Length: 192
Image 1: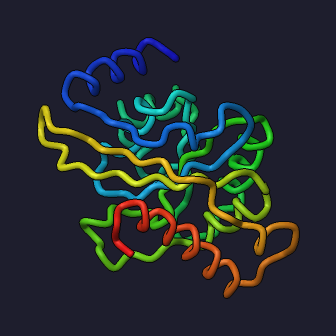
Image 2: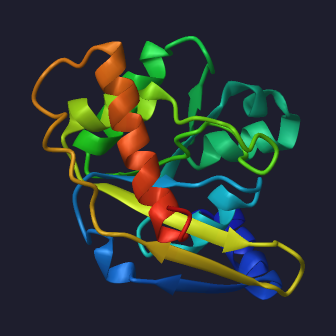
Image 3: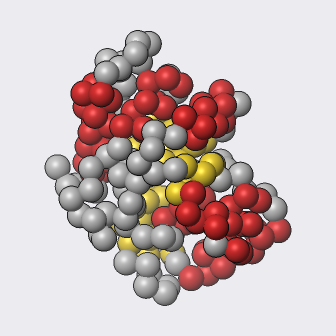
């Protein structure tokens, strides 16, 4: 963890009370995909601070163009993705990270759900999950993100992806697999 990340973690833990439920569902080692609902720009920062293992997130490329933000994202090895383009470079970087035993953080809808309540999960999460064949861990965040408020993070059991791994999936199957992952996330929040 670099100095900036340490300062960010200290700040976040002073501003919010973070409670993680069922943390034992998170694998202690090896590559895995952490898939979460997305309610705020705080989500990746809070998840990164709350998890015992470092999480390498995927983030929209536009964020890297913001001077200080872009520098910070590069310093913590965030993977940039060109949204809506089927970014093969981002998929390859994600698969390399998983092969190297890292935790990859993905927000399946690719956007904040409060801003876009009808957002659907993108097929990229399913493509990466099927190709990597690593545990997919659903996570649900419940928070207002008001200063000094509670942030509840629930870590679910790995999503059963056995019907999707080990073969090439067509677009319909990718969409189905993405919805399967997203349903597991929503179920943790009692939305199903």
